[in-house]
Length: 203
Image (cartoon, rainbow, N blue to C red):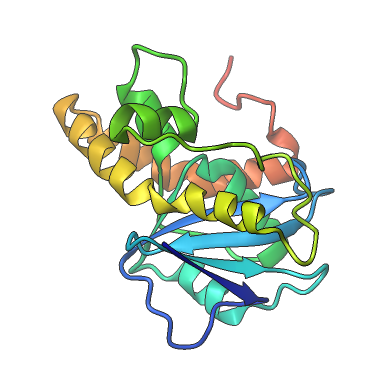
C-alpha cells in the first residue's frame, strides 16, 4: 500500500479509473461549522491519494473535475455526508454516486450494523481500526497514524461494492439501490438547506 499526500488538489495527469472510492475527513459533523480538511481517493489498486486543504483554500480544479465527471462513478460509504460537505466547501455536485451503506441497508436486513468496519469484517474478513476516527484533522502535518486511518477508509470500498452488487442482484433490489443513489445529491442538499432531521415524505 502506498499513501500519496497532495496539498490543495490532485496532481496533473493522475488517472484513478472509472470507479473512484472517496471519503472525507472534517473537523466535525456539521458542514456549516466544521471545515473540510481531507479528501481521500483510491482507484481500488491498493494505493490511496489524500488531498489536504488549508483553511479557506478550496480551489482544487482537478478534484472538482473528477467529482463532476459523468463518466466516473464515485464510490462512498455514507455518501450523504461526504457529498454534502464537498458541495458546501468545493461548490460542486458530486455524481454519479454509489453508497455502500445504502446498498448494505437494502440487502443486509438481518442486522442493524452498517458501519464500514462491520461491512469489511463480514464481507471481506478485514478488521479496520477506528482509533484515529476522532482526531484533529485540521493538524498540519498529519501523523502517520492519521494518514493510514484515512487511507483505510477507501482502500477496501471496491471489494465491498463487488460483494454488495452480488447481494443486490440476488435480492432483486438493484433498481431500488440505483434510485436511492440518484437521489443522494438532493438528499445532501436538503441536509445543507435545513431538512437534515426531517422526513419530507412523512404524512
